[in-house]
Length: 173
Ligand SMILES: Cc1cc2nc3c(=O)[nH]c(=O)nc-3n(C[C@H](O)[C@H](O)[C@H](O)COP(=O)(O)O)c2cc1C
Image 1 (cartoon, helix red, strand yellow):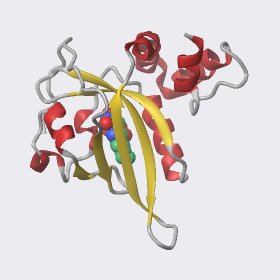
Image 2 (cartoon, protein in one colour):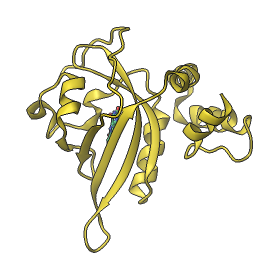
Image 3 (tube, rainbow, N blue to C red):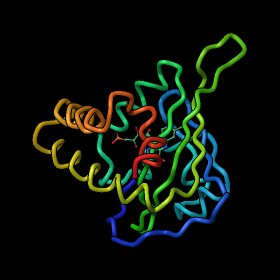
Image 4 (cartoon, rainbow, N blue to C red):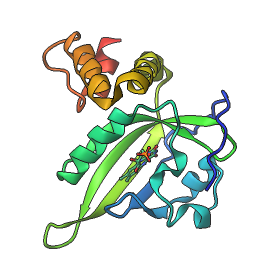
């Protein structure tokens, strides 16, 4: 499917309404709720069966998705701030909780993501960092952007990691 051309216009999300989707172990969408379809601008039929990168925004650093996949494939849940691209080119920022789904034997069967509106305050802090990471990736790839992210977090204290950075940003800024 052809990717939409991004435009610099934000979609306003409702408070307390979740954008939900499930994927298989490869990141192919197997379920999404009505609000996902409404906000992304795609019908459920267009979404189900597609890779989740269908809503990937070029402003998102690759390293964030690498860390996400590393966490969930190892059986850990994860939270992240994600900027997504709608079908009409507009964007929406979401606070996303990624959860590992398992069968009765404990085998990973897929993943679930629940997203809600994120505070402006957090995206204002993250936007320049993500921008910098994307720039770095163009030159040096994820090895260099990963180091930049680690150094950035370290500069804010020893206890800050990619796993708690959203909470910490709330606390610090
Ligand atoms: C449950 C689940 C939900 C996901 N949701 C999103 C999402 O909302 N937006 C996004 O860009 N990537 C999402 N991803 C990550 C994508 O699978 C993919 O790694 C990412 O879009 C980067 O794609 P690329 O490697 O093709 O550039 C999700 C992955 C999983 C497992």
